[in-house]
Every structure is written in C-alpha cells, then in structure tokens.
Image 1 (tube, rainbow, N blue to C red):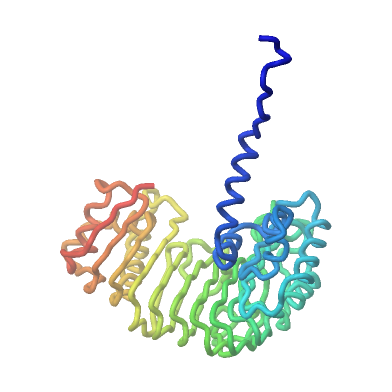
Image 2: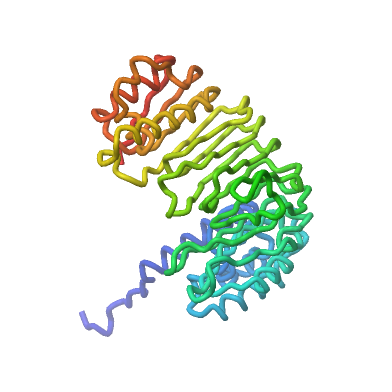
Length: 387
C-alpha cells in the first residue's frame, strides 16, 4: 500500500500526561471537604500550584484547615518569605480554626518571629514554628513574653533547629499569660530563673499558672544546666513529654527531678542516667514511655556506682506504679540487667501492668529484667523490639 494512503495514527499522550489527567479526573470527582483534607498533608506551595490545574482549584487553597510552610522548597529565603507573606495576605481569614506549621532554615531573628506571629494570629488556632539561627550568634537567645501572650491560640509550638555549632537553647521568661492555651510544644529551651526561683540558684520550680487550660505539654531538649533540683508543677496537664538535657561537665552527678501532675494520664520521659526522680501524686497515670540515656560504659564503672544508679532507677520506676502500659528503652534495661541478684528479692514496680514493651536489646540479654518487671503481672502482654 502506498504510504501516503495509509491511515494516520492518532498521536498518543505520554504516559505521565495520561496519569496526570486520570489523577485530575479522580480528584475532581471528590467533594471540596475531602480535597481540603488531602491538601492539608502537603506543603502549601504545592497546594497553591494546583490552582493552575483547573478553575475549580483556583481559590480552594485559601480555605485549607492546615497550612504547611517549609523553606527547603525554595532556592532563596527571600522568595520563601515573600511567599509566606503573600499566602497569609490572600488566605481566607474567616475560617474558624486553622493550623499553621512554619519551618525556616537560615537566620531567624526575634523581630521576624514576632511579625510572623502577629500576621498569622487572625483565624489561626494552632501555630508551630521551627527556625534556625546563625552559628555566629550567641547560643542563648531571649524570647520575650509578648511572643507568647496570645489569647487566641489554642496550640503553640516552638523548636529551635540545630546548627553546625550544636544545639541552641532559648531563654523563656515565665509566667506568660495564656488562658485559652491547651497545647504547648517547646524545643531546645531553657527558662529564666528570676520568675520561678525557689530554694536557691541551683533549685527551682516551674509552673504554668498563666495557662489554666493547658492539657498537653512537651519540653524537648530542655536545658536544666547544672541544677541540683528541678520541680515541674503542672496540676492541669494530662499529657506530658519531657526530654531533659544536662550540663556535660556534671554527667556523673544526679539531678533531683520532681513532677507534680495529679491528672497526668500519659508520660513520655527521656533523661540521662544517673537520675533521681520523685513523683508528687501521679494517681491518674496510665501509660509511661521512659528512655534513660546511659552516658558511660557501666562495665568500666565500679560496682558502687552501678549500685547507686540502679537503686535510683528502681525507685523511679516505682513512681509509675499506677501505669498499665509501660515502654522502656535499652538504657533502662541494660542497667537493670547488670544488677546482681535483685530480681529474686524485689517485687515488680508495676502491679497494674497490662502491657510491657522493651526496646533495643535482644531477649537473651534481658531475661533477668523481664522476670523482675513482670513478677507482679504474669498475664501482661510482652513486646520485644530489637534495635
């Protein structure tokens, strides 16, 4: 057959174009509420770009219940800052409740943070900020109270990113006034002592009297420096995550940590060992996740040192006696497994235990610890998670 007479084949779409068209068709069939939910899990930059796909999506991003900003998607911080300002200007501020997550790499000064909080407070109920600081700046940056005094926000999170110079600790002055706040997340922080000084300069007590409705509190990489005693008084809190950092020059010393939380239900706790822990009323406690970081090799330490450390650890576990679900990391199990002949004489610290999870060590290394922990709850479920 003459090639000129052959029927012309229709050009085929490329595979990725067909896939995009099919995905668009599937998305278009969904109601706006479902699309809102899906877009809430991606960065707002991509959600805005979807406005070019179809007229239907042109204004959809403006009323998203969650806005996620991340500077890593931009080549220049100036472009990122302009984008954030533009989105904040155009978003629908009539939304009853909006959650904003903001992560910025690069030098972020206090004035920028204050401007960001002020610009985003309209219609926003949950705001989480993660920012970096220049290694050339000093390690402690004071965060003023007016950055926290916001009567509209229900949830607030602030994390200072690590830099090449190490962790950055930010000083926060208490008490700040936040009557409606229910959730507080702080990372790489330390609190000024002049508002909470008790006993002497090496012993102080922290409370959140300005936050009467606070239910969930998270203090990660919380710097307690060289304190001899740290008291956290949180009678209203139900959920607590506490990650303590010590002065590296006094690792051999144990700090007294006291937690007063009669309504506390869940407690996630990380700290260096040795540590002396005292609970002032944990009557409502149901679930504990404890990671005791071992900063030295106990095989090279005198038996007296191990005996003191293990005694403090066992006393700490007894403070969690009301817990029904317990998770212990490898540092805790390692110390318990190295104690000679204690499991035959001491009762389990968890008489109400229903579930026990041990992480980080194989079962043949922790038989003694398992026997001790389950001695009062033989019917409890046991989960072993190797590292």
